[in-house]
Amino acid sequence: MQIKLVPGDSAGTVATFYVPSQGSAHDEIDFEFLGNASGQPYTVHTNVYSQGKGGREQQFRMWFDPTADFHTYSVVWNPTHILYVVDGTPIREHRNREAATGVAYPRSQAMRVYASVWDAEEWATQGGRVRTDWSRAPFVASYKGFAASGCASQDAAACARSNGAWMYQELDATALDRLQWVQKNYMIYNYCADTWRFKDGAPPECATK
Image (tube, rainbow, N blue to C red; front, side, top):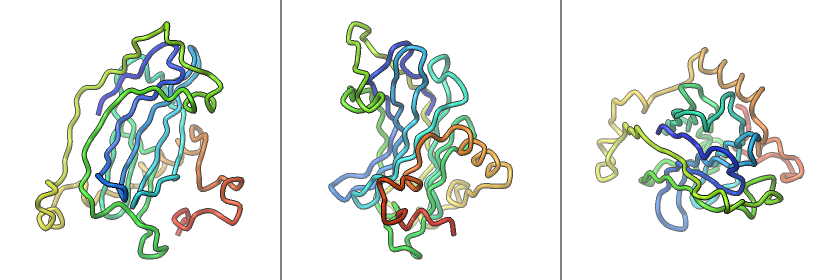
């Protein structure tokens, strides 16, 4: 999906591009773009839900102004991992560690694609300390160029036999270097490293091996 985010004072707004399943035990893969006061950077907020449980947030700044032009935000979801990709550069990898840890991985529920802009002034900008200036409305995020390569949910057997490149896509050495560059220089929050939140140790899916 190509997205150009709300320019100027976007505090309190959230633009989204996400893929959820349905029901209380849903799976979901989120891109959320948290607005900010004029001149301050956007926060790109990512989260993964499995069987209705989320709380797997990683947040990033971008290395460009996401309000000045369209940029491409992509999700690769296959049995091995979920990749969040920006302009061809991976920013996050969430690996399937279900067999080793027992932590559910999104793998059996059909997803739909949604995009929205909504009011989240209670929490979106600096924890809610900066509220929406409604005199600056309307807040417009622009979307174009959506494309998908995947399997129709009505034919799970065919999906399992898919030869699509995305089904087996892994990170090569160059992509891994880019991922590490982003995470070193632009990641601002990683739930796996939040020792205040997880006083008894990081969640099991955070294991590196």
